[in-house]
Image (cartoon, rainbow, N blue to C red; front, side, top):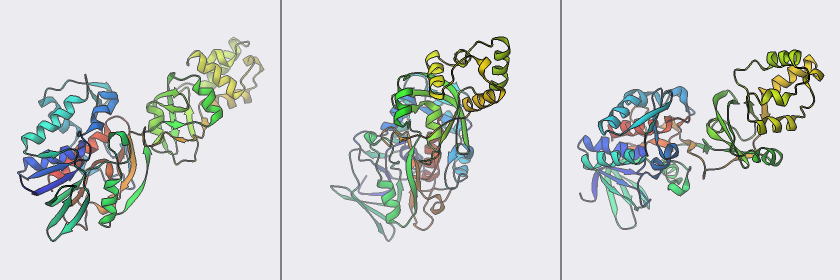
Length: 393
């Protein structure tokens, strides 16, 4: 290949590689550039190293965006079963750990190897360790400058991801490109990230680090039933990560420590049968003893239940199932799995991911204002948006 291509893709992550293979199989001359020395490092750490590569029920209800239905077209045209068929064709072992959530059985590596093989078979050239120094429009296409040369292409796909996981190569380059060409960028923030706690709670719950319990967590209008993990200084685990995507930086988060339990009725029954029993005894039937003890200490729940009036039982049950706290903040982009916000979907075609006012310019994956829930939705968006652009670029 020479310095002229049909398609140049900036970013060798999940969306970029998927887009490259799709365009390459169409007979397009494709070059992928990435400033990192190795491609798609986030794939290797996804799902705790087991790559939660899709969710079988991925749909608009699982995504945050200024326009939540923007993702619908791409997901319908390249649904989870389409990617699963590719995984099975390569003989990659996988398992369904929770309903709909598909993970590699052993490690994430086979997914990356599959994508690189697809690119190689499609004739795609990949240059890692090659940073883009500038992008300039031409009469027909774009000029892309690196440290050593200027490359030309009819189509340019920006697949640079967001700000999450800077150690894996994340940067704001894609947002700068969008602004350069007059596209709007929605405010960004860390998402799927631990919520940090203010000092009093941080000290109290930090002593319980490592405890994980199923809860129902609510933030604004969003609610999730997932496991909550207590760590030193923060709330983590799937429940906290899900809630973090909806946290506005100021509002309280609500935790139901006993989801699905008729707490008020059970407390009244326990008071009648064992009036000298305390609330800690009751909670220890559902929660680890140390957590039960700390919750009672934090809320001043002392003494036997016979000393609780009906009003007290009402208030206690309500508190246990709507235990509100205001996070001090989040653990930031360094520990976030994805970035919320990004290139405004109003400037893009939902069918092709092309910029409406800039012919030949496309944005795919995390750089776009489409952020999925935990559970494989973000990678499914990467596959689907990459295919959408790859079929058009």
